[in-house]
Image 1 (cartoon, rainbow, N blue to C red):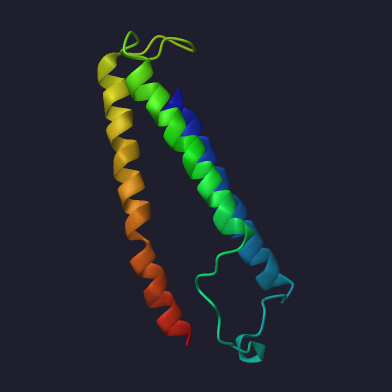
Image 2 (cartoon, rainbow, N blue to C red):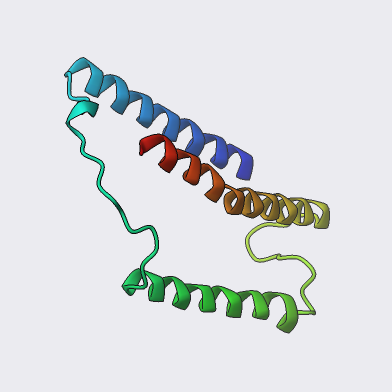
Length: 117
């Protein structure tokens, strides 16, 4: 069931992006890249977003602490639907792989910034 929901979300995301792209193309609303002026940008600044990220990082760390250390009696979640331990472990490791992939995407943004400049 979760893969079906994932499939629905993924196909709706692709469908919406294609509809927007070809809708803008049909109405000739794509922005002109020659009118864009690239200015020097500060890539890192300590402002309110930094502190919000730190707050949510602390909340996430506390939730992980509760999940991994305080709840030793629960080996796998049983609240919503019965799932096997193999499925729970598989989904956990897939999530870890995606987190590592997202952490590695920072290098791609550096390449994108060099391309823009």
